[in-house]
Image (tube, rainbow, N blue to C red; front, side, top):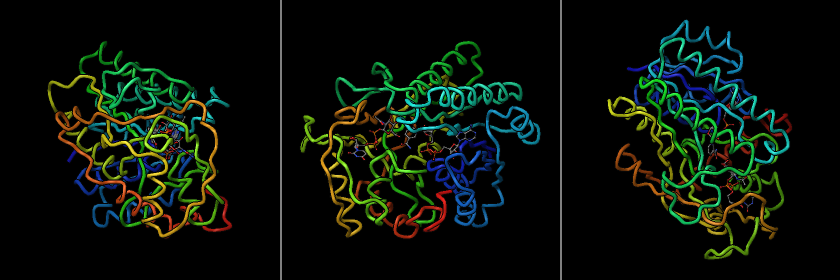
Length: 348
Ligand code: NAD
Ligand code: UD1
């Protein structure tokens, strides 16, 4: 079976994808600097993979450490790379743009240079629906105009452009850019899940921390949007469906016709903040106290995906609905109220 390098493999989406890859029979080497993740995630993935854990190895490194990355490629030949590693907090990127450009852009450039040097030109890259900005209409198709309102989003746009340029210069590259909508939930075992550092920026990790008593209430960012109940609408996708989307993308890389292609990974369904909170309350039996707040700068009103291209060309479709997402998120949260750490521990 092919050998895949997964960067950011200890992170939220990375850890779920590594597990699905192993279960699908792939060999995986993951790298991560644990900047926003924990080594516990790696041990849990191994546990969940059982006998298939023998096909998995991990190297702690920062992608910007060219010598360390070179060593990995010298010791191991890779059939393809799935590139998750990057910083992703929008607010932090506005405060510290250079940190984001350094980590996300320099890290990616070094990765691509080392891939070229070792003849590995198959790539799946984690892009984001953030590149659609405030879409003029929904569902968002892959052809929509692209924009960015913050340095995080700009790193995604720049890397997408970089990939198109690479393919333009050398047709041996095979690249799939995956634009994720809103990944939520956790592996149904409750063994792995999202464990953000500090106060969560995203809706569901915040809701989860309210449910376990770590935070007092959820502030709803705006209830005056032109939506069913005034709150923002997003396309939430179960993280295991998202992980499966990467396997579909890897298979697509074997298509001789593939060059540099982009696919949305979403469900095609929009859910409001209040609908999501209600589904989580039902799944958890916990009341989530709400405070109404103003709109968050940079937020769009309604964002959801057109899933047609991924369904047709990747032969992939999300299977789980928001009730499944909330059930699995709560299963993870109730078993791990302090994520991969314990109450009283520092977060990582
Ligand atoms: P995450 O923070 O859980 O995972 C990213 C991992 O990359 C972390 O484990 C971090 O330690 C590692 N990392 C960061 N910089 C690194 C470096 N220089 N060298 C080595 N490792 C490094 O985030 P995630 O939610 O799993 O997201 C994975 C990717 O998907 C990111 O590129 C993110 O921008 C993108 N994405 C995420 C979402 C989302 O809502 N979670 C949405 C769209 C796109
Ligand atoms: C946010 C980022 C986006 C990034 C994505 C995944 C912004 C402006 N956008 O998108 O660039 O790609 O996360 O990391 O930060 N909400 C609340 N209260 C909260 C948190 C969120 O009401 O405490 C609302 C938001 O206003 C939004 C919805 O919940 O309507 C989802 O928010 P979030 O999970 O942060 O995702 P996005 O806004 O889609």
